[in-house]
Length: 441
Image 1 (cartoon, rainbow, N blue to C red):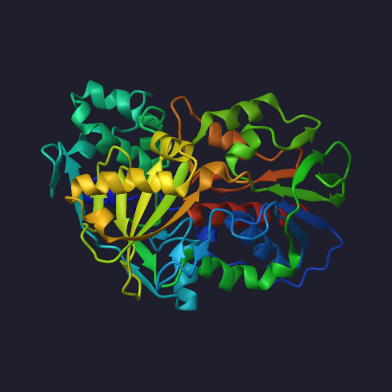
Image 2 (image 1 turned 90 degrees about the vertical axis):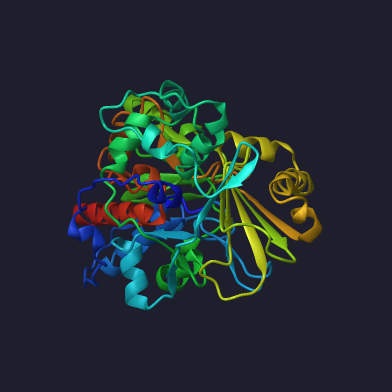
């Protein structure tokens, strides 16, 4: 499901202030000569774009990546259908961003996603709901700091609207019992990249791989799991699980927020308590994408409201292909449940049963294949993308602050421009932090 489609079509429009023009600029090639060294942990969108920025500044760097591939929460598969599918992030949310500018500059083919919504509500498929749920629960900056689920109850929405509310929260990568009405509205106000959403003819992964990674791939060390960071001396010393040490003048940490929350990396000295407390206040729930291939198309372009999966989307939109692939975009408690089943076959049975209920048995009759991408079970990701938990306050600001002018933090969860939970938001932070580091060297 397009993370912003339901909100956009349901009339939730963020206000927003423009981020600085520098964020929308590409780094210019410099002729700096420096013996300084930078280490970057994580080869996702933030780490790769930070490396690209340092490369353009003429600064030496190395990216340490725990997994066996680059991309972080970006990925693709080309042999499931007659068009490539994005295993992770796939929608470009507006063109007024670093990613949008890169698309334009490189002539990358994208298509506006104008697919229509259908709602599974009280046992029937409907083109609209009896009530405009989003306008009821969207809240604003003066709303109470309570969960979307609790706020929906206060606004008089009964249990029949539960999975519609769940889908609204799911668009933000959250469970409706955890996401704050107040702080989601506060952060949504700063959104400035545009309200139209686009799909790539190829994949989002290809955009980053072809036009960013291609320049710096020799600087990435794969299967390098960082276990300790010692910043007690003039130099920062990073140790991986094999015991190998890496020394640098500055360190940029771009790992997903659960890695920091669960203390997968030891810091010496320990990080300030205010900072580690801030990590815990940022939400990131389970997330899963399940691709269901069918012999024929029997389904609507977007389906909202399933109790097993609150959002389905037709994958063929924006693609050049003929295969019929339906994406189940599963977040929060729904993702936790499906993940607990333990096998693609069990997940498939649950989703097909739900779709059979919606479409009179046509799903099972037409089923042709499945691919499950469970981001919550990825040991180096552990979830979907960040959201604003009840009580988050200014936690993102504190989490994003540098420590001792040696440790810097980037990634979508550290975005302060309202663009968290997006690829372009991650890229913005990589760019900003790389420039800060360059200024200090």
